[in-house]
Image (cartoon, rainbow, N blue to C red; front, side, top):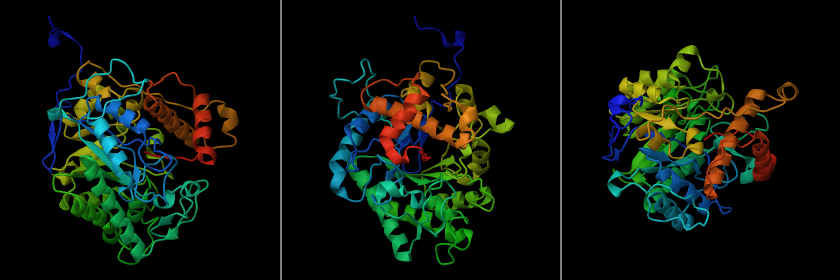
Length: 445
C-alpha cells in the first residue's frame, strides 16, 4: 500500500505544486522555473547544436513549471561569449524547430550515449512551456568573439579587466537593435517556442540603458529615468507587435546594479510599474553586473535566513506588479524556504539555476520524491594564499564556479550524467580549451 504522507517527514510543497495562470492565457503547471544559464553549446555557425537539443530534452523530463533558455544573441557581431546561439534571420529556423521539438518530446534522442531509464516526457496537456531568453550584450560583448567593437548607450567602458571602450549608438543604431529583438522573438514563435524573456539584468544592453552610470545621453534615450527606460519599453512593444497575444514575453530585471550612483531600487520599481502597464507576462528579479556581481558576495543575515538574494526586493514590488507574476532566482536551496516564499506572497515563482546543472530533474525530486534541499557545489580556487597575491579571488571563484556548472551542461549535452565530483583543475583546463584567450573572463547567465 502507498505510504501515508501524514507519517513522513516530507516538506510541504502545496504552494510550489500549484499551477499559475499568466496574463496571456497560458498556464505554468507548477511554480518551479529553470532559469537561464549560459550553455555555450551553440554550433560554430551560431545555430543550435545536437548537444543543445539533448540538454533540453533532459530538462523537459525534469518536471519544471517553466524552462528559460540561456541567452540567445540578436547580433552575431556582438556576442557575450563563444558558443552563443544567434538569431538574426531565418537561416537557422530548422535548427530552432528541432531545438523546440526536442524539448517538447517530438524529437527523440537517437544518440547511443543517451542516459538510460530517463522518465517519459510529460503529456501534452501538462507540457512545460519553453521560453527563449534573447539578449544583446552591449558593452559587455566579447570583442575577440564578435570581431567588432562593442556598442552601448554611451562610450563608457565597463570597469572590469580587459573591457573595451564601446562605440556610442546612434538613434538609427538603437532602432535597428530594437528591430533585432522583434525579429528574434518572431522567429522563436515560428520555431515553436512558447515565449521569450528579455535579458534586462547583469549589465547587458537593456541594463546599460537603464543605468545613469552607463547611459549618459541627453537625447530621447537618456537624461532622466523616464527616458532611460524608453529602450526596454520599445523593445517590449516591438516584440509584442511581432508575435501574438498568447505568446509570452517576460523579462529578467535587475533590482539594482549595486553601484554608487547607478540604477537604484527606486528606479527599478518605476520600471516594474511601466512594464506591467505595457503588458509584460512575468518578471524575474535578479541583480548586479560584471562590475558588481551581486550573487557572489556574502549574504546579509536577513537574506541568509530566507536564502534568496533578492526576495526582500521582490516582496516590495509584489503589490506593484498586480497580476503579473514575480519570479526570484538565486540562493534558494531548501524546499521549505521555497514553499514559504510562495505561501507568503513574496514571489510567485522560484527560479532554479545552478542546481539544475547537477540535478536536471530537480522539480521531480522536490514535488514527487520528497527532497528537502538541493545541492550547492560552492566551487573555489585552490592555492589561495598564492593566488590572492596576483588576482581577485572573489572574481576568480565566481568564474570557476560558473564554468564548473557549464561543464556539467556540456556533459549532459554529450549524453552523459552530471559529475558532482568533477575537480576544479579539470574545469580550469576545460575553460582554457573551450574559450582560449577569453577563458577567464567573467560571464553571467
